[in-house]
Image 1: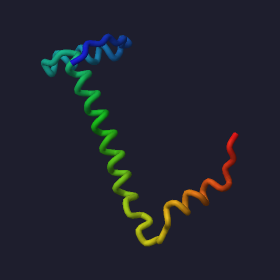
Image 2: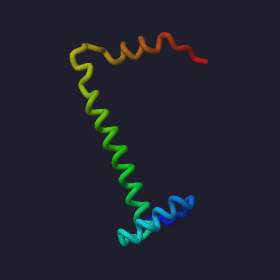
Image 3: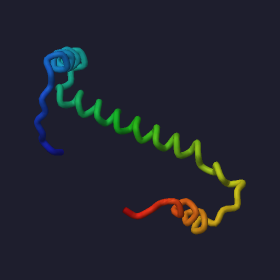
Length: 78
């Protein structure tokens, strides 16, 4: 585990202080839990979006190389 220092505004610090007393956890534990939850939820949203588009073009016959060439034809190099 790495040690780091962050600055919190008074409102967030007061909230964390109250929560730490109520939940009998340190402020550091609460911050770590919140960050883990945020990261986990983001990963879940990304995976859900990928699963929703998986197989979207399965009924099309596409040669990926030709498709990429046609997309790039209208682009110019600066």
